[in-house]
Every structure is written in C-alpha cells, then in structure tokens.
Image 1 (cartoon, rainbow, N blue to C red):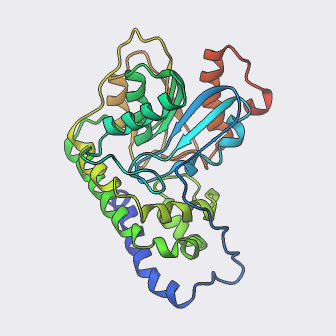
Image 2 (spheres, rainbow, N blue to C red):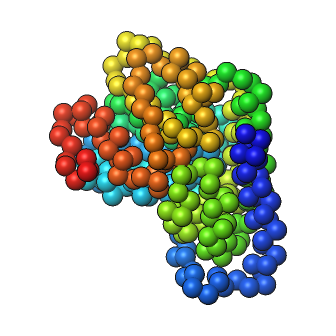
Image 3 (tube, rainbow, N blue to C red):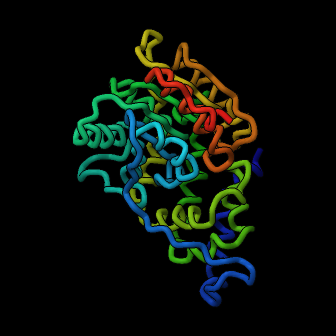
Length: 313
C-alpha cells in the first residue's frame, strides 16, 4: 500500500527530472507522432435534451469527460465546466476561501445565469462530492457519482492522501511548458496515470498534455487539497425526490471502497451502489460506453425515455 500511495509522487518527480532532456530535444521519439495540442478552456457545452452537468476531480478539467461526451450529447444538453480555481477556469472570488461550498456556489450561479433550476448531475471524485452538495441544495434531477470523495473513517488516511496529491500537483505544474513532449512518451503516461485509470494507454496524449498544462495555472487546487480533510460531506435524507447511483471501481487505488466508499454509503441512505470492474478511479477513458450507460440508465429513467440499444451494447 505504501508503494501505491506514493506512485503519483514518484511520477511527478520523474517528470520534473525529464524536463531537462525535453528541453534539449523537444521532438518526440521516432515513431511517436506529436500529439495535437489542446487549448485549456473554461468548459464545454453541446447536445440536446434535458441538461446534464459533468463535474471532474481535483486538479483536473472538463476534458476528462471527452471520451464519454459523444455518447451523452445525443440525449442531453451536456454542460461540462472546469471547476473554479482549476486550469482554464475562473479564480475563486476575492475573499472567498476555496472549499466544496464555494465550488457549489459557483456552479449554482452559472446554472441560474443559464436559467436552469434542476439538472442531472454527474461527478467523479471531488466532482462527486460537489454533485452531492448541489443535490443537497435542491438542484439535482438525478445524481450519478463515480468514486465520490467526501467520506472517510480514518483522518490520517484522508490527510495523507490529500498531502500526497498536493505535492504531486505542485511538481507536475512545473512541467506545464513541456506538456506535449512529455505526454507523447508512453512511459510518462503509464507513470502518471497507472494509479488513476485501469488502462493508461487508452488516455490520449493530447488529453494528458491538457491536464499537465492546466496544472500550471490552477491556483485553487492546493488550497482545496488543504481544506478537503477538515470536514466530511453532509449526508442526504432518505426521503429525497431524486435517485442516487454510486459507482465505485472495484480496484480503485485512489479512494478504495473499504476506506472511502463504505462510509460514503452510510451518509446516502437508499443510494444504489454498483461495483464496476475493469476501470480505475477515473473511469471515463477505461470504458466510455459503460460509463455512459451507467449515467443514461438513471437520467433516462427519470426523463421516461428508453435507452438506445447502441448505448446498451
């Protein structure tokens, strides 16, 4: 377990050391095409249907949902923002401390501006915590969360996990200027992603590069990681008006179910739990069709629409 917890930190240190050689030779190795550079942007919206909000994890950005978007846009008005304080997004307002509540405040303001009262809300990791906070505030039409953060049994475990991620983020941010060259290296993708996804090579180099670039301009991430261990999620009542589906990767190496998922279910009475095989903590690139299906089964049931066979396949 010690090796697994420290792997992302090892990856960050290795990346920092690799920057020296990248500066000398900015072209990828022979046989590896240079990835298309993706611009860091504050969010994405497309599709038709009832609104569906997708929320990413800490240190990430909206592009982590890219593999799933084509499967969802046929059925929903898909809104995928980058959270406040993250790369490409707005900063936290002056005088506002980074927190789950502040993230939810920013999203509520955006929903109000768009004239959206309720939305199907989906979140992964930190995004799952924010999704549940929006639901607590009465903004959810349905909720699907993948390995949501926000609950734990050991204060030491969550504090050490947040500290490790914080240090890794700080080191990786120093590599932002060389994101494209680094992400073209298969060993870099494996080292950076092997604790987060089940199949690192399924993550497109351009998407990893966008993540690395975004980390170089994400002033709210470190303060968020300092705040996260200070208080757990507020539970939701059993007599709620919307369904909650909790999906947990069977082999989640970031937030193992035993330590983080079981206590989460204690705070969500009546929630459905699905243990997903073959995916990691961030499942979107591992199996985008399955992730889309797990979302659409819930949203379409609420909207009383049949799920197309193509997505079920």
